[in-house]
Length: 68
Image (cartoon, rainbow, N blue to C red):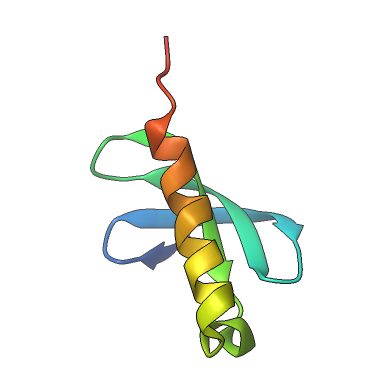
């Protein structure tokens, strides 16, 4: 079975965690050809402005971290 693709860029390989806001998958960024984590916000949470803002902050935080 082929991996599900999100935004024509991220392949979802397997579920690695689930929480109150959503589900986290091990994935692959097909444009940069590297592993990544993909968090999918639960539909119910997407209707709550505070939850959506928190999700966006969580998504931006790793981008600020430099890698050796």
